[in-house]
Length: 392
Image 1 (cartoon, rainbow, N blue to C red):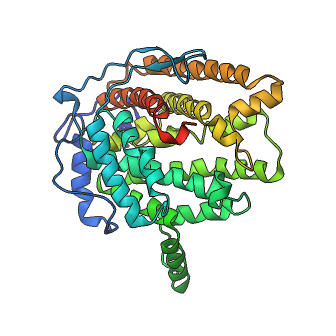
Image 2 (image 1 turned 180 degrees about the vertical axis):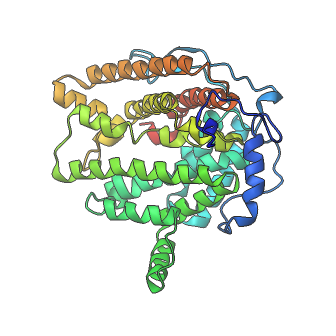
Image 3 (image 1 turned 135 degrees about the horizontal axis):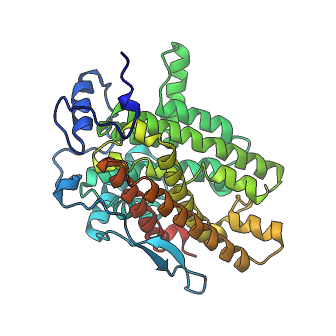
């Protein structure tokens, strides 16, 4: 008889080995380790680091975080409804940034702009948004991938002065997939692919960051990273067409693309950085997927709020919900900003409702991941208000 209990979140089969948060992940990692390919040299990993991911039994609460209205920007706009910030540890953030800058120098990404890159503080972003790990090596995973994703955004998609052009974006993105997920050997054609990847620091950074993540992940989690990156790039291709044709999309179409190009991408790292795995049947559970999409969209609207001036000033303005609202609805930038704040708050309250609907599922990993998404929303706002990237 076939056993379908693995696909039923409410099922409680008799355990055949160690139980508790992370036991499945640890046993699976151990079983698969002999079959793993080699990792990239210089991918940033350091053995023997202090601290580490903290299991829920070690004092980590699984209770949802409280949300409140918080001022942002210059304080003159309506407040953002966001969870409380869980942790601000500037020393830890500085250590992650130190490792990140050393890694970036090895990959060559942002060569000639390292001072500006270092000031951005992607290590601080990882510290703020992944509060359930004290291990700088685990936090570096998030810092590297976010930095690499943003580098692709700058050099391929958005920044004209850095060489971003709409017509070159789709073929560049296709090579990103091959850098992160090497295709089978095709003889001399693979050699040509490899030569190109090694000549492009953005591709080198993405491949190196994926290697470091793989050291701390199950194969399913690595495939999750690759899949969500490709999903994000579908939306980027749409933005490129809109920029090239100089035909701004209606707000509804932009949001349809933006909700699949949100900080949902960054949030798929929550359990990897935390040192556990949310089982695939729970990660794919529709209510959980909706919740994480709501959290990711809320956080990316925070990005739109803080980046509107930067994007409006580009030679080819990028899509931004505030600019699009103002043009489509004939209102001022201030009015469009206020409407975006209300939309953000709508998504956060929707997340809270989704979180409540999932509370009955007996999974500590699920509760921890949802709390981690709240920590990401809070830390993301904290970072956007302090990073040099979005300060005028």
